[in-house]
Image (cartoon, rainbow over all chains, first blue to last red; front, side, top):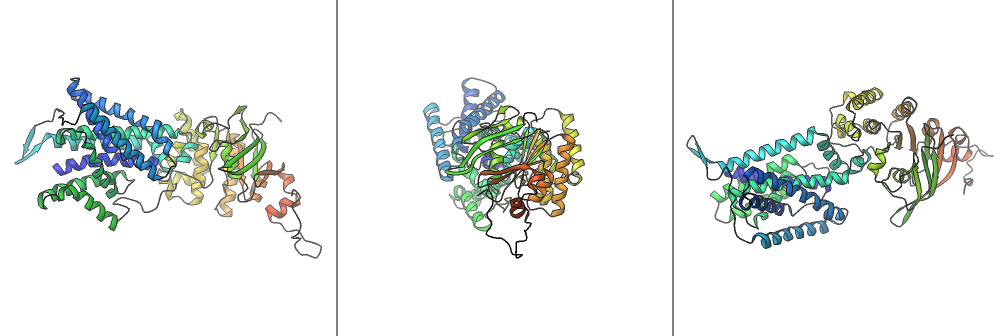
Length: 282
Length: 257
């Protein structure tokens, strides 16, 4: 159960990686730090301003979505077409800036975000289930259902798919591709914020929470970079493996297990679980 | 003749330092089919891309329906009523045929009209109706070409730019596609600018033709007259002329050089 819940978080962050990669062929290494910022904004809204948890959630998601769109429109749009290396360095640098900003603003203490699910348990057939973990799993499921419906059943969502699949043809259809890409960044940052808020009651909020992004990256690769169901499955697999290696293997294996799985996967099946072998035409 | 729907004056387009279009001018009359012929690398695709706004010309103007469009983004040009059917089809491979067609109508706000046009398009290409829920990437080359043309049609354009619709298709299919192009032109009054290597098909379909060589227009005339010119016959239609002793007069130069 706990492994599943943590896996869901990895899956959500991996989803953010994949959305942006599919659309713009950029790998956004600041994804984990977007999660951290989202969690802090929710903390500010709920604890400092005394707002309701749900209002705080909405505020954090909206603020992060706008932030994500601006990030694309102001900074990242300019590096499209530059070597991958430059983009990778840029997003890593942005991530470091966000962490520094957070430590200056909120300090390096550890915060707790009170939620309606905190410290509540249900006993079901002798098994104790914590509401916090249930909230993560249910939240992930709802978010995925919403995203799925959006991408397959709305005009804008289908246009986003179209722009990801063939940018030039999307232009020919009159789809405003640049705006669409900014919106994809907005969704990606919003998803990261949700992941951060769901994670908050379990792992507490501090400025290094964003390093979860590295494990989520492993999850995205495991699922086959570029596949949305793959990202979620990869996240859950990593979460479960981590839990069991923590329980059964010698101490220390828990933290490296995600990367061991990543290396094995790259050696055995480099395209990932759901990855297509054919390269996308650029 | 009234004011042309498209007037291109003296455009020069570069790929980095390489000048691909060296001062090209041409006009397209409203309601007509105009073709640009040329060999590989003559700059045909570049001309179309410059017109539709994918590439910006360094110099010169592109006037569509009385508006200068040479600096506009392609999605804006498209909203003015010009649909570009790119070379190599460029369908959205993971969307269904129906979704591809709906994307063609992305800019439109009249669901009834879109539904009507969807039926009209299925009328032109019945095979697309059979495959409406299949992924576009799973279609054959010819079907993808039909989809690409249909998708452009879904925007209800005033003018269509067609980039090598015959590329990689069987002669029978090429003929079918050209028949449909003529029907689109006659029945819906869509002006068509057609770029082709298949000079025979293009000259038999279009009203007026331009010949592009290494970034320059070297000949312009009605297609009926172009078909009769010796150079066109020899270099584009492949009709060999019998020389004095029955051998090919390989030393003969093109008249425009």
